[in-house]
Amino acid sequence: MLRDIIHHKRFKQSMAILFWVAIWQILSMQRILGLFVASPVETLQRLFELCGTGRFYLSVLYTSGRILTGFLLAVCVGTLLAFLTWKYEWLEILTEPVMRLIRTVPVVSFIILALILLSSRYLTQLISFLMSLPIVCMNVKTGISHTDRELVEMAEIFHVSWPRKLRRLYVPQVLPAFTTATSLALSFSWKSGIAAEVIGMPTGSIGERLQQAKVYLNTPDLFAWTLVIVLLSILSDKLWRKLLACVK
Amino acid sequence: MREMSGNDMENGINASKSGLLVLDVTIAYDHVVLEKFSAWFKEGGVYALMGPSGSGKTTLLRLLAGLETADSGRVCWTENGIEKLCPEAGYMYDIASKQVGFCFQEDRLLENRNAVENIRFAVPEYNQEEIIRLLGELGIDEQECHKPVADFSGGMKRRTAFLRALLYPSDLLLLDEPFKGLDEENRDRVIQLLLKRKDGRTVILTAHEDAEADACGAVIVRVSG
Image 1: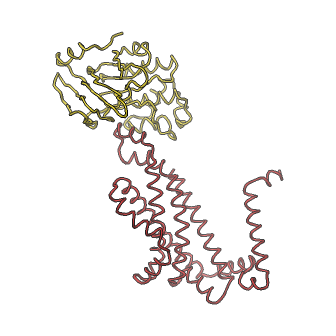
Image 2: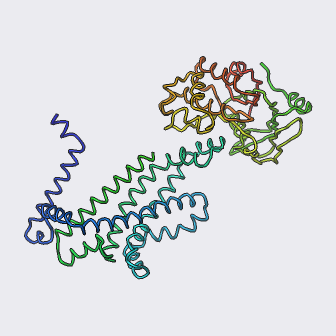
């Protein structure tokens, strides 16, 4: 029984997490470093304190709503664009430089440009959207291109209607690539969205709270908010995968 | 057992019969697959294309289905002796204008779907009970009908692909090696159902043995590349 538990993958993963938490604890106990690194206990204490305030939930809702809006928009536009660029070569050639530009230009450049051109209210959505779009578009297009040509030919011979082809033929074959792409895009959305908020500081956002923690050198706050972001990112990824599994 | 001769073609057309005319068709990729091949398939007839591997049987079926183009020659539907669709050489005749039921050599089934769903993918108007009954006639019981075809044996996949082509409302039924991987009992089941449900359609199949063609009452058409 005990041996079974020890050899279980979950147990091993838990042990790995505990190992790194122990390292974190040791670092926070160092004399100099300890001034800048909040201990795990301090972080959790601060997190519980934050959870008791209404402002915490407002910030979580504000940021999550905006990041997920940008992400979902990127999923819709990226999927449509993937299909269109797969179908029309001229469109692929036309959009390729833009996609390459988005992939290579540092996210900070986009944030600053967006701050000049737009209100900081729309910054999070825009940056999440921009960072997710090429990932979704490229990977979904690859998925569509790898659809079994023989099955497509079979569907053509039997004059299968488009909705039926989409549901029974394309979706099941593109879904694995779509799941990987959107999961990756979602984590990018969180990273880039939060970075945008830290620079643009929209009122009431998690980014603003992080910036305040930095200004006041409030490391327990910084660590607690970082933990919240990690948990939100993991939670949204799990929910997204669950949703896609239902489609499958 | 009867084999197609050059006279069949001339007599058929002269007698103002309806059917499918293949005239001097040549298809080549990096080598010649079919060279000046001609045949006339009378409407409602059953024909078996026979020839060694690589002689161009599958290519000919694909041409008739509109999936290949000929480098020269032509394919025409004749109705009462009049050529209805008479495209130029190399032109792929419009498959939308003629319905073709095709049983592909590689089955081409949706592996994660069951047999009924696979058939209804092509013929959604058929109800589930009728499909299960017909699959039963082919030796696939009701319990197996609900399993994903990925779990099927090669023979079961073959019969499912055959039934999908058979049930598709078509003018022309093309069966590429419909008996591949089937034992004698299942081969007879397929033939019985084919003859029972062909409903006046022209059937062209590929076969390796004379006995298979004979059992279908098919006219043999030799394809030699």
